[in-house]
Length: 247
Length: 247
DNA sequence: GTCTATATACGGATAGAC
DNA sequence: GTCTATCCGTATATAGAC
Image 1 (tube, each protein chain N blue to C red):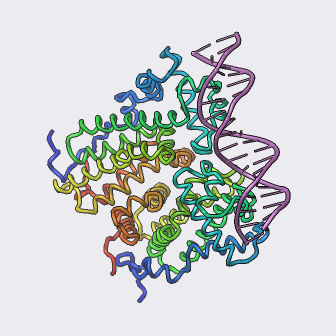
Image 2: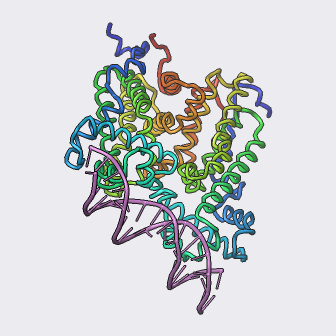
Image 3: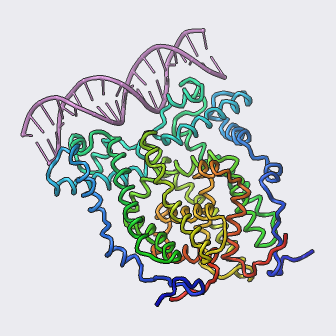
């Protein structure tokens, strides 16, 4: 049934849930560590993949835990050594400096997120579905690797100016993606004519709130799918020309 | 003309703008420094108000500048000495320790914000006006003391657990205020029945985005009144039972 | 592959001159 | 009221044992 061009009845694509996402995209902390290993074979002194992945996981988890309390610059390598269970010397076998640890996390993480988001966008045909997909995927991703999203947001400032500039585009890329989708939808007559740039900006803020205030949402027992539905409903009441939707 | 109880036509109260706010509430960085002086006469070694206020302003501005780049724990007292133009010894005449500087900023700033918000809420009669006032005042406040809001958000974690607990309520107080107002509006039949807690949560996120991403909004030449109007329009399309408004 | 011990530099804080 | 000089603990990073 081809209903994509009929703005009066929109297909919601409710088959995309957190569970289905987990199964489709093999996003996990382990996959993340393997990616770091493969990309940094040159500088990581240890060669056995299994050992490296295991220890990287411990290092990253410890980093996220400590930095969420004190920030990256407030974390000493002694803190990290103690929290991760590795010795000082051990740590430096994985990263040549504290800054390299930061830059690696930012670099690999950003690419990771970009890849999944881009991939997920392709499969959706209508503009309406695409908007829903972007928002859901972003929330699902930040649900699985919440610690990374939080860290990346809070410690963007801790990078050198050179490194920071390199990720300036990434900072705005989700927003651009939403912005373009809103514009496209408005041109097609599916969405209302609005200030799409400001809209994309506040939508991004709502997505970020999910991982920035996770403690709050956890305490209130809000699931990621509940949050996604709420955000989508909020946006749709502002943007949909015709509020009728198919279930 | 009494139209407050007629949900069909709502008075927007567009007399509240950034300019009118500035004139009504004497919120300024200087007023902030004077408050710090008055409250800390005991520990500040310098006694001449004019000198203290002038130097506190330099210390705070320098703190905000450095911390926005490196975070509080990444800022050394030597950094602060250089950036503020005071010597090391000079700095310690104003704050007995680095942590005291942090705690003072958090304590005085939080009280400052709470006072203005509470005061501003009283004057508005209808629930609809009250919601608009809370949102506008919060944005206007964070426009004037943006650096403080940013710092406070980013460095909440840098406080000791004891101090942090003390401000846990403050963290949620704006959200509660919005939450209560939404519930009240729904009871009165002016607002739609929604998940008010989630709504308050994302509204708060939109307010925070104004000071967290100020560089972005500046570059795009968005004024605080434009932003306020956009956010209010967004919320109203979701919440207003009847979209008609008076101008 | 992981550890302990250590080099060298930088951190917060203070004493006492002006 | 402000400065310089300095104490001393802790930071990053490495060398070399096991």
